[in-house]
Length: 275
Length: 328
Image (cartoon, rainbow over all chains, first blue to last red; front, side):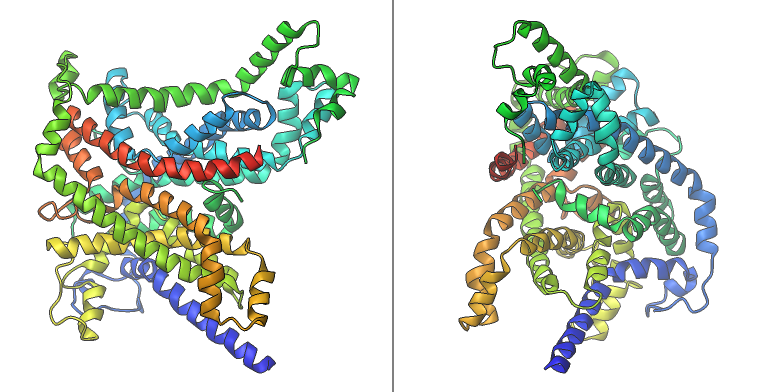
């Protein structure tokens, strides 16, 4: 009986491995191509393993894209910080005060996340052209924050709802005031929520393409997503370098997935659903 | 659990603060307190409210007003955009490309969602009972969802490559097709290609949401059914599916709103081509504004896209509202 059960377990595990292998195959294929020379890649039969890897692709990618990666890091980092600064006090207020408009506001936060980015880009382009924010990193951080802030408020609100209300009340009795309670009690206790929200804001901004595409019209150093796109536009078939660049752009999300797994899964469902 | 109000008011020191939170109107200094509290509330919420107004309210209003004007590239220089009423909208419906983009959006959305939800639910059921390494595998599954869409689209361009792409190689070797398919350069294949890639991207999300939904189901129910002799399929059909119905509705509506707005993926994979075969409404709106520099029509197309999302969003919100009132 036990042997039978464990053999079922093993076959389930094998099936799981096969399926995940299939799902992750494109990622492997990207890595594989980034390590193979161009003349091997254009053959009609694929080379399955980079048995003698070459680093030319990465060398070129580093030369051409390091600036773009740096810009992406800066934009994504600033977006995360800015989003948290704006979102966290608001999330706290939604939990602790009984405000008549709170329910409506939460509904708005849910709804705006569904607005197609192409529509936002359309309006923001025209507005930015007027106020002189085109081709500005600050403008891009603001635009990227439209993805982060509503999400962060909702995630943090859900997180803070799980903290006992009495914490704030006790702090108020001690005379800290609401801001004192917020900084000294609530913020330290919300660490996990803050990390989840911050990670997602970072990832949203890191992945952004359409805002960078529409708002950057000069030769200014653009984020990596746009960097890849521009590179394919010119070097359509230089797959080694293209894939090496794609690997570079995947590093932050993959690192976060490997080392901050629990925060990612918490954010994945938390923003959309009650947990 | 939240403490009830009477308990709290019994505490003399806390009473002032709590009175301020929710004044029933007994204190002498009620007005001043109320004003002070609303000032405190404002100090917490003002940044977010200002941001929402400036970065959502104003742009959406702007888009709406722009859609009633003939806003072209010259309008940037002159600041003049003549009012044209609903003409931009009537123009759109007279444009066969617009009508075509609606059809493509519908096909793209329907097939993407069917694939994502079908495979996502199957995977969630598969992972429901843990097995060795299942937690790690579940986490790895999220990778396609976390990658920037531009990266995914670039990788799939390489996979779809006609002569040296791995997909054609495998399909030909396994005798599924006789000749290599021009995945991204023949209209019907290109639409299939963007759908397949989009399904690949969406599977992790729907699997994760279904999985968390399954975790919340009462185990006893299944054990009881098992004792009563219900087979696995019967349990699935008569217990699991009905219990998952509300969640399925939410995943469906979320997926629709996410799928109709997909831009990066299609833009990088095919650019909307060949011959407009993959030009969904989002791509069409972009082309109008940023290629033809016709922001008036672009805004109108964008607003129609919002309207489509909104229809589904309202249903989503209604189901969300139920769970929210349980909360607050």
